Image (cartoon, rainbow, N blue to C red; front, side):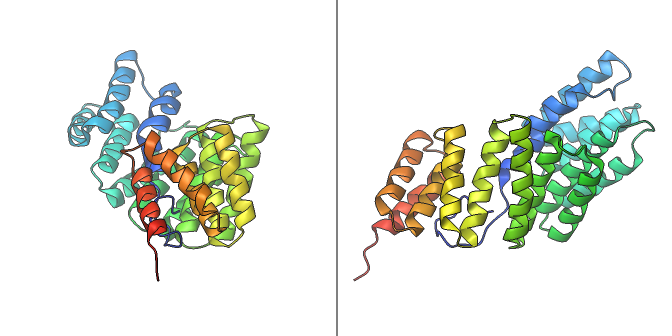
Length: 278
């Protein structure tokens, strides 16, 4: 879903924020609480390997293979797949993650299998296989606990896939449910902010600009100066004829987050705003 393009009407693209969540938020916090390891040394290796996958994916891949040969089990297989994502071998990573979800050790929870499938879906999205991403994410939802934040996160993932396929209303349906779950759980953190920004973008693409603006402003209420929300609200304001408001959002974004991709997009949008056509 486009939060980055310079043209306010351009085609949406896959959003890298969710992939970063694979390598950091989900992998290092959620997975840390799982009991895959049979002893403390294995647990420490697993956490170390996942951290290494963020810093040096190729080295993590090699260490994962070595650990697999020494009885690393599911944890080694998972780290290898994560490393492949970091190496941008998305199709291979997705295939391995799907297999892992199916072949996990007996007794593995449905919730954990759902998380692995969700990561496979994210990898398929990065591999530009939207049909496979959607199918895997739908399977993950069937395994995840309904009403949980994990369920909401998978809904957000599937909404991104739907938007990439220009199925904006279906994406909005998923984002509506994800937002409702976050509200029920009183989770007003990054996930809810991100969900609101995505829904604002989806509403923009179906020309529901007042609803889009409402979501962008709600996102900024939860997270003031959230860069993607500033970019999105600026785009919406520009489409609604509020050039001054759009410029203000984009200038704030470039001032606060000058080296980000969102700021680069804001600068391009300001340049387009300043072009005078006789």
